[in-house]
Image (cartoon, rainbow, N blue to C red):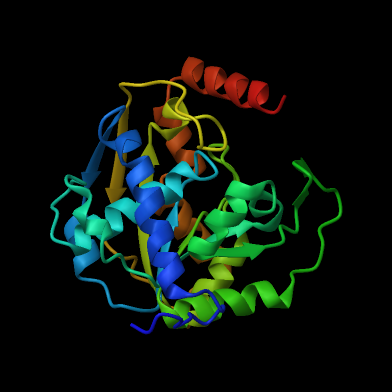
Length: 267
């Protein structure tokens, strides 16, 4: 690899590689040490094509979820089976991994800007601004959808289709449009324990000894030409276990406690 070789977004791969190595080394104990990350389905990662793969997941923190995925993906590609033991897997990381993130989040400070270089595809959220929902949705920026297309053509893309860290919020139709238009391999991931382990941004460990779960599911079977946007949205909600029907199996007191916790986090 040439020293100044760049990806389609102009990022120098040599710099990106070292950022992944450094941040990977700094964060490894957050998932294997301070807490215990239990992984299922890592064999699925090794069977995926090198490009046009879309990972869909529920969302619990701004950054810790994505960082865990970089760890798990690279460990799996290096032959680890459902574990992230020995961070040697970060020496030659997969460099064509990208993740979709809100522009306002990635501009909020120096650290997010550095993390953006690792692979963020910054998008303008049409339904939210300045941490608050907007009554009139803005038009989708065509550059955002174009950048996602470019990223899929170059490699793997991680997205959180609910667009929020709150549980059981609706899946945004934009994800379904991306799936229908670009026909990627769609791999669902379901995570848990991150909200209890980290602060909302996912930068600070707030509690140790938490069991974190990370389940990789088989790629979705999708009829890209004949399934409607609504059909795909529903399929995504079920796949990441955020469909309203899942609320029925959660005790009411637990839901109330989580809603109260989410409310307090807004302050």
